[in-house]
Image (cartoon, rainbow, N blue to C red; front, side, top):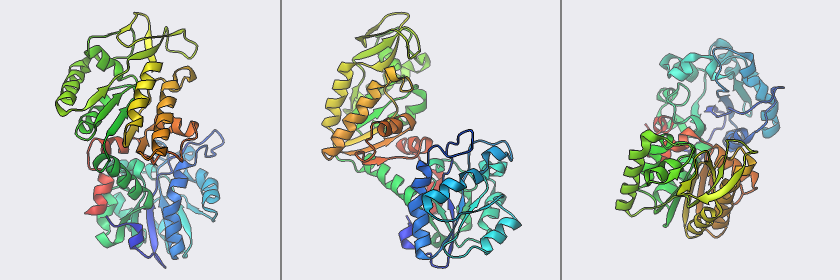
Length: 397
């Protein structure tokens, strides 16, 4: 793996694929700069060497050119984070961009327009990738872990136009890969994975791969009800994937054969409707009455999960334990975050990823306690599945 530290960028130009797909408010101001902050170390390393950077990213899902998805909106926030002037060019390829790159002086920062204004980006079009490669940069750096699982022109295809000595992992991408590998392949035992979220179907590959890696598998969130039903429990009106019940049985059987302990909820917070102002009660996970649905794990389950986490040396967490967007049903998810924070302080290695899990960690002020917080959603899931990501493979060939 060629990394930034292997290269001196003095008087060199680096074309960096960053992930600046950030949320904007109605005034087109950035409301969460996490992804910009995550790219800062890579940008600074190159500038501090005496090089210059050309930044390229996508923003949102535009259908062709659309002013509201222009990356010009993030220039003020980018300048604030970097403490430097950022030049913006209103295109991603072509003569105007080539001129701007040619005129870029050491220490300069150039931001290109939204790559997805060109449909060729998502199609992984080789000509578009070549046009990006021909802008005049000396090096190609990928620092966009969040899109590394996509074989897009700027995340994978472009790498073939740079030889092995002129392409490298950015610091964020390198950190993501090594942190995930550390948890998955080098984790001290006992290894515990907590997998949540609404559907089993979206995490089948993850669960099956984790059965070869972990000692404990904690299943929470909406997907737990499919497993509970597979064991013959009454789940009332809870979310369930009936077509995945046989698969749930297969996973439980496989786990038993491999000596993996599967922990499912033993009690639940149930509600009479899917709403923050629903009537609630706590019941055993074996018997949810009709007309009621499970929306969070109960106190006994929280205690059980905490005990497993405190006895673990490596912890992987992806997905909420309940309907985290409703405060009334966020307790289970928050408790898992607090448990992982406590175990991490005692020396466990913890990896947290996925929107709601990361949101819970931030909300509880635990960011500094978790060993590594992943910036990737789909990319993290694919790595947890054991898949090779196109954006990563392209840098090593």
